[in-house]
Structures are given as C-alpha cells and as structure tokens.
Image (cartoon, rainbow, N blue to C red):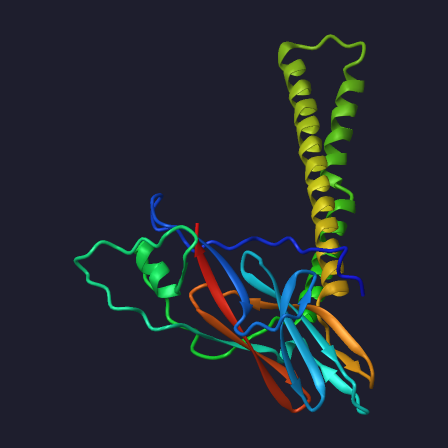
Length: 280
C-alpha cells in the first residue's frame, strides 16, 4: 500500500486560548525515547514481542482525533491477527508546579516547551482530569458502514422525484393555458401569477436541495473510501507478511504522555509518546 499519495485532512492542534493575549501553543507527539527510525519524516516508536515487530508514528491531529500510523511485521512461522479495536492508550502528565496565586500567571518564552499544567496556568484555564481508564482506539468498520449507509441515503434524496414540485408546475401550466384568449380580472391575474411564482420558487429550492444531497453523498463516499483504503483494519498476517495503516484515537490535549498499548497475539506491548506543547 502506497501511503505517500495521501495525507488526511489534519489540523495542527493549538492549546485553548483563554484570552486574546494569552500564550498559544503548538501541540505535537513524538516517541518518548528517540529511535532514529523514520518513515516519511516521522520518527517511529518501536517494540517487539514474540519476534513480532510493531512500529508506531504520530501522523497528525484532527478536530477530535489523534492519528497514528501503525506497522506490523510478522517474521514468525505462525499467523497473527491484528485488530485496531484492541489498541488503547493511557494518558499521564507531570505534576503541576507550585504557583503563587498572588503572582502573575507564567508566560513562557517563545519556542519554549512546557507541560500541560504550565500551559493551563499561563492561559488561566482549569486543567481537566485525566481519563479515568484506558482510551480505546476507534474501530473503523462501524464508521465505514455508517458512512456508506449515509451516503446511500443522501444519494436517494438527491435522486427521488419531487412530486409536489411536479404538481405545482402542472397547476401553474394548466392555469396559464386556461387563461389564453380570456380577459382576466386583476384578481385572476394576480392569483395565476402567485401560483406560477410559488411553483418556480419551490422548484428552485428543491433543485438546490438535491444538489446539496448529491454533494453530501460524494463527500461521505470519499470519507468511507479513505478509511477503507488507509485505516488499519482487522487482518490476519500470515508468516512473513506485514501491514501498515492509520490508527485513530480520541485526542486528549491535557496530557504530557500517551502510552499506546499495541496488541501482539495474547500480549500487549507499550509504545510511549511524549506530548509536547511549544509556545509560539
């Protein structure tokens, strides 16, 4: 699978701004320990269990998700099932330093890397609690099915016949034909014009709605196709095979570290990432 041709629509995350003058931070993830192993410019965290090699790299933040790319290599003589829904992460953070409530809020220098607690204090925002349990990765299969179903529903709405619009058009035409060669009163002319205006306006709105449904259907189909082709999906790796795909988690910005737990058969291996925020 060639991943160089696709980049998801990713959003570089910023820590929330408390006020217009509060410091802002660029958020990122990197392996907690440097490995000097890179793929497409991204450093990979590495782990091995029962001779199976697992590699994980941070790709980007989306609006509500954090995206990794996972890679499995199976050099063993046995088959291995890889299931994205079995991935989890645990969030942690460094203890908050003691702040004098009477002192001014901290203001890190430009380019400085700070902890979640310091960033929150510099913005005068509360630090949310850590997730009470391990956070599961998204299973792409239900989302792919839901996107396909929604796309089909939108396509059906775009294609269905608008009987009310046809009825209004027919009524307007009948009214116009009936008026040919007859002298109308002002009230009759106004009534016929009103019918025609209603028919024209309704059909314009109906046509615009059909276009919106058609566009929505195309967008949903594209999203489903991207997940289908590029997300890590449940697969059986035969001996000597490898697989590579995107892994999606709910994002949690108020952590200093994420320990991703990758399944390898009946075992789980940890891959540790530092979540850094740089003042800019």
